[in-house]
Image 1 (cartoon, helix red, strand yellow):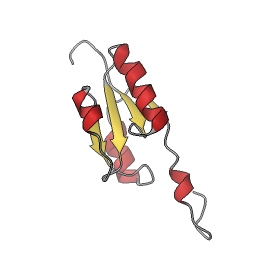
Image 2 (image 1 turned 60 degrees about the vertical axis):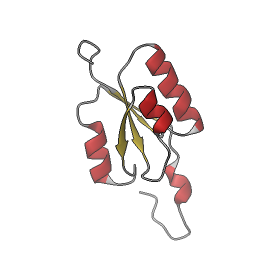
Image 3 (image 1 turned 30 degrees about the vertical axis):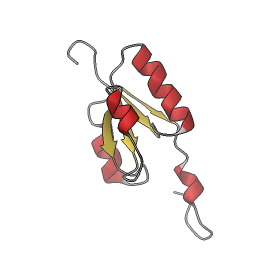
Length: 90
């Protein structure tokens, strides 16, 4: 890890697009951290050397933990799709 700089956070790293982003970053030998929902299977990410942080992108505490010490954030997650009628758009 030393000499590679700070990690890039990928939000939604287990999704279709997120996996591609992670693979592209890892192919460039970048350190990668992924914010992953608690129930998601992140074993492939972990095997490829990605630091996995469990949490919810809609939760401020999860985001604070995930972004600590990162160089950049890439989000491919679509958490807004969980919106229900009457839910505020924050």
